Amino acid sequence: MEIRSDFLIIGSGIAGLSLALKLSKIGTVSVVTKREICESATFYAQGGIAAVVAKEDSFEAHIQDTLQAGADLCNEEVVKKVVHEGPKVLEELIDIGASFTMKSNGDFDLGKEGGHTKRRVVHSADFTGKAIVNALVTAANEDDRINIFEDHIAVDLITTSKFIDSGLINRCLGSYILNKKEKRVDTFLASDTILATGGAGKAYLFTSNPDIATGDGIAMAWRAGASIANMEFFQFHPTCLFHPEAKSFLISEALRGEGATLCLKNGNRFMENYHEMKELAPRDIVARAIDSELKRTGDDCVFLDISHKGKDFVIERFPNIYERCLSLGIDISKEPIPIVPAAHYLCGGIQTDMEGKTNINGLYACGETACTGLHGANRLASNSLLEGLVFSELIFNNLSQKERENIENFPAIPSWNPGSAVDSDESVVVSQNWDEIRRLMQNYVGIVKTDKRLERAKRRIDLIQAEIGDYYWDFIITSDLLELRNIATVAELIITSAMIRKESRGLHFNLDYPERNDKNWKRDTILKQPPI
Image 1 (cartoon, helix red, strand yellow):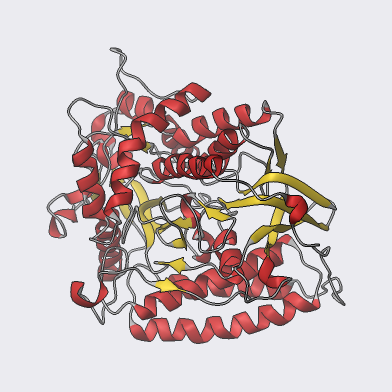
Image 2 (image 1 turned 180 degrees about the horizontal axis):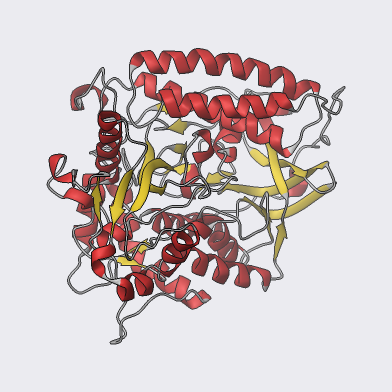
């Protein structure tokens, strides 16, 4: 089956849906999402959107906070653009129907998070992502120029290099997409394709990300010949709930912004030993501090305590976190919360310019799957939703001004050919390799790295990749196999990038090179290869 549209967007988070609503003004849009449309990392975002809306704040302060967190690896031009566009895209989101927590005087009830010198985080209690996604989904469902394909997962991008003389400029024509319910691979063609597939937290054993975060866009772009940047900078959120029944439940940084303290099981605070901003230090510093304390004490977790703020405040400000913890027997208004750091946000990804363009014609990327230059070596809290909104605007501006290539002029694209593949009778291979990848990444490529750990990880991922490659071509593809193939590719890219950078900067900390080396490494880590 062949589906044609002016624009193909793969992913349905804040970046994908906000862009779809803009592009529908100038053409037809296909939105592909591998589960239901609401399921995205955006939906689970608790904190909010960083934007300069308070009189006491300034664009310059937000810019400097972002640059400081990024450890001198941000693209300053990108930072300035994103920060200055913040108030505008926020208003557009409100116009769509998103609502945020307000004060009695009509001002935003702004939160403060790690690395910020001012209160500037616009939020909807502690379930901001849900409020945003509900507004975007409602608007998208009401737009008859947007066609939404749920339970569809992208297999690979379709590029001219696969069908035409590879000496020509490589161009993206669309994507092969697996219809999970029909168990059929369809051909989606579009004048322009946008990857908004989110992050890759499922590469690690402990993550705050939903199960869908398997790095699909990055892996597909890599196979198609796109440049990938800064994969070694994986942000670990310092405070993920530590409980056997609490899979991937994040304890928002906003708690620390409101005065929550970190302590050991004996009640002793420790952040003052690591940074002058204590609990409000940037995430990389807080995560490393917790990791250090856990290794020093041998404890399974540390604790986050906001009980001193009182029950009324806690329930009003953090209703979602309060109810979730209470359901697990933890009353956060009376007792500290057990937490551990968990893989949270990938600052690297598909390298783009300031208009979201990749090095492949007709292919764009935005949101967590992209490396735009905003975050540098470490993302400032609540800049991610902001980035998704701003870059959807920048991509729209680019696409609305350029002449689109007519799909009718595309070369003939063959239907998906499974070859001699058969149904698998060894699904254990998928589950075994999945588990092995996540464990080796957690143990060898986590918050603190060494050359020896990275070398071990590289040897193991090479073996796993070879096994997955054989399995992929022998058996009919499933969504589980596609996600395994992608997460293995992303893991290899992270390991490779980490081995290249011989210093410690931001989220990348290597015990063999504990100091920052601006002379040699104040630059992006770029990985390139010809299309596979």
